[in-house]
Length: 367
Ligand code: SF4
Image (cartoon, rainbow, N blue to C red; front, side):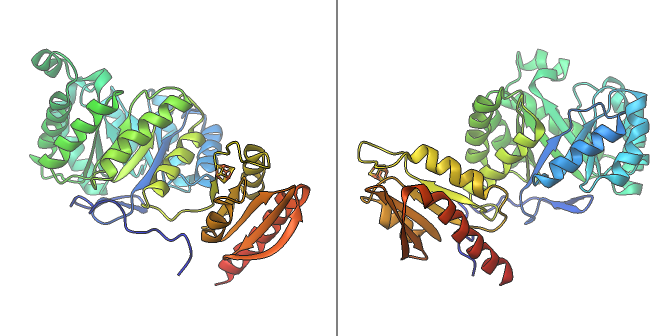
């Protein structure tokens, strides 16, 4: 087998029904997939498709596009046809855009029950159209736009309120024989969010889309999402994830993929095992690790590269990795598969590691 292949994940996956979002299976035993959302005007078809192409290249598996106007709705057919990954139309206020998105061939439609006022009497028609075209519906409840009735009942967006909103909406669809549903109950507080998803997971078998909404700028949002998704995914809860950052969507995808890789829910790709450095370090570990990471960026094979500052833990970690360096005395011992293959001067460490990594990667790809 390949080195770096996932070890056992932390938990058994929650049993959920499987739905199909375009070419991507969601729920059941399908792998957890990573989503993001475009930031372009959807009506600007060229810019939107360009951003979708960038997201696809970064590993995004499903993309959502906002649809606030008729111009956006008109653009959906072309975008859905030309996108390399399934496109979900995000509809907040207007049921007529739900029909437009289904007609346009979108892989799924996200509706927000809190924001669609004349929804109830439209559910039957939506269910019929979605059933005929086998278009799944994501019921996306958001703490910031909770149904006024539930807000009055609970006083604020509690986990119970978020779950009740979602399941009530789902029940309207169920009445019309529609069950290709995915649910999200997002909140900006990871603790509330985790509790909401736990309750939701216990009360239905729909696949769940995880998100900490309005998680913040990149650093804070990354931590909040990683903590919340980590808690839920380690309990087997969650079928798709979206990291929301006030940063370009490609960054969201990178974080999402890293979270899944860290949990062994996705094959790890390049992994740099570098030490934090300490008073024993005989080399600038930060710089070395950054240079190696930059030099190997984009490598798709699961390669574990150890970058160690001294000979205390250095050789040990370097031996556990596919490749590594343990530095000391202005030199670097280069290890491949546990064997020292050469010792090079400090100035040659980065290029030697990259060279050896490329050789190993080529071997792996050839297998
Ligand atoms: Fe310190 Fe050496 Fe450990 Fe790095 S490998 S943290 S330099 S003891």
